[in-house]
Image 1: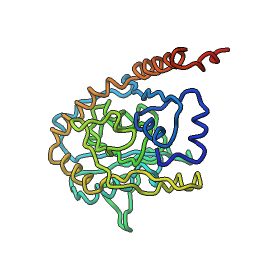
Image 2 (image 1 turned 90 degrees about the vertical axis):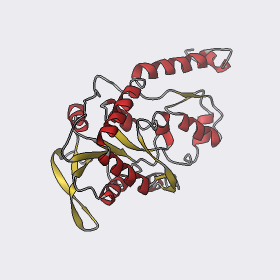
Image 3 (image 1 turned 120 degrees about the horizontal axis):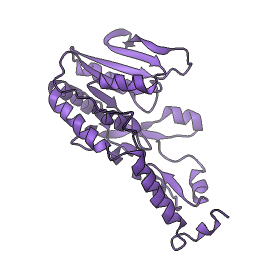
Image 4 (image 1 turned 120 degrees about the vertical axis):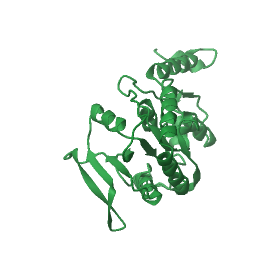
Length: 276
């Protein structure tokens, strides 16, 4: 999720027999930093019985953009999404921000106003609470466009889950998300550099960086989605169809293939030790 790997990780991974990662980006990062152990890529999946699509065609009324994360000050760049939405200056639109309730005291049934630069933002609403899947899906079904501007992900499951509901996402085109995002079905945001990852710097006591998505391009995508609503909905339908490939059955099959190859004595003599 951040770069480079923490101190000691390369040595520990080189002591392993096999490493399982969710994306080719993780594999490439590990290998570039000196990991020699065989690496198996088997990405995540979506349960399409839980994340099912809804038809948004023909909708009118205020446009609803959504963004969700655990907290605001993280690599997921919630503040960047809010800033881009405000700078897009769309009067007939609202941004709803879903945050996790770390204290476990708020059920998220009420919305809260957001203040930016000392001013209340009437078209930005905060939901702080721990929702069950049913409520989350209903929220996604009611949305028109999602924003996911993370600076680094091992895979980035959230925009794929949104896609499974037919929701178009404005997505940072970096790290693990590149495993599944496509320009015909997602509004992709380029990287303009790297910035310190404050949370990890504090947690590990070392210096890490994550990618910085373009604010200007995010603003452009927000405006395009508003003025091209039906075209945006069509993108969401394509994303939904592409999401069907990313199911847990596929993930299991890939993992089985990788583990079988690892167990093949002709490929890895250490397999003799497995199960003894």
